[in-house]
Length: 207
Image (cartoon, rainbow, N blue to C red):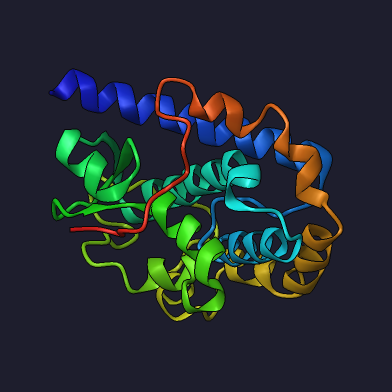
């Protein structure tokens, strides 16, 4: 079990790094693993919604964005990537998720899909801020991140990550509408799908 957990954790962290590298090589999206960057995920998904493409056509991008959102939970909230067992795969519609320090399981990949399906009623940033079981910055087991402050993480006030999000939201949405992410579609989240499942389906957020 421990070996499987570590395998999933290392694999998904690598997928997140690959996704960020490929996307930022083609655009200026501020995917810096900050809590504020989850606003960018929301706006990119909104751009995909407005493009008129169905979920199947953008499923690999949604998967990559979900992996990125999950990695923000790993880096900022003390979560770890875990492989879902058969029952949870059926429940969540995803092969992997994250376990919080208090043991609760959450499904960031499915949350991205829900944003695509229903729009602003679902938000990745709000999902983080309302998440149960988050570790607090500075506690044992959670590495300190540059620019991470308690006020910035919880209240959205202060912290370099939150400032980075301001002023980029509208540009990000416009870029997504123009197809900015389309260039990153190819070959990015496709790699993320290998060995972890190729579907971005899923509607349940956690247990």
